[in-house]
Image 1 (cartoon, rainbow, N blue to C red):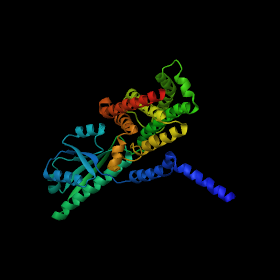
Image 2 (cartoon, rainbow, N blue to C red):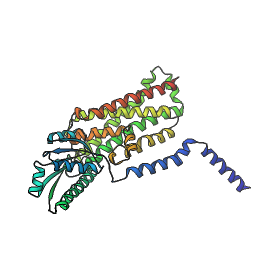
Image 3 (cartoon, rainbow, N blue to C red):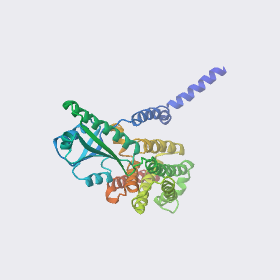
Image 4 (spheres, helix red, strand yellow):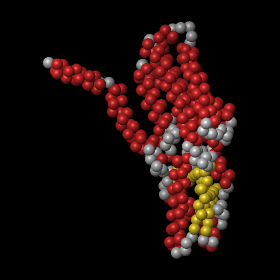
Length: 370
């Protein structure tokens, strides 16, 4: 009798779980999603890495070398010029991750003197990715050299010089400090905002607040403003630790950096409000925040894994991750000394995200208010 009662109870609980889409999603959807995301993001392979070439020779051999690099499919040629300043501008704007400088009289030195020089310059704001690009480009150039030597039976030689821009010692802190700032601000500002409003809804006190003399929008702003202030203080603390403890430089304008920190905070705030308008309980808000904020920010923002190494579909998904653009802004200002002109594109994207998220949150809030 006891066994039958226990079995009946287990059946009831099983049917209860199967009828709850959110529980099923956590049980089956999240593990499947994590396997696919980790499986495709944790890789040392890459395709379509953006490169710029400074061809100071412009002869047949230099063109053959450029074609050899691009033919592999691992590099996407963004720009070819004869001026190193153009390459430096591409780096500062974040357009390319690696540059190849072909020395003057390249073909003449190669065939006549049996020796020519090629310089590889990488953007080392992402140290591991820069090392991967440099190593692969070195192998490609060596393979090109060996091909020419086999054809003529003459030991031609290409001297390969490597340089790392912005982080010559490949210090890991230069990469993780900006990423940690983006992650902390997103989690604290967005998650805590979503939880605090969801708590009011869950406890039934939101209705009392909405019938108070204050305008509903002022009520929401009043509840979330402290989190903006605290998150901004957190940003200053983390940036200070990065600067004083890990010696991560801030080469650009500190005022500009802090202003754009505020912009990013507003985006995170708007996202938190949107989540809270959809969630009816703190548990729902917490799970939504973890899945919508934590995992994408860690995996698809370029914080841990280079976006260029991901499949095309994940690269497109990364375009809607606010942290991706903020990390680009941080690295450009802190490590490259970039001005607003150099980061205007990610700033515009964050501005558009802010408007869209606020509009969506306000629309949902009006539905709740009615």
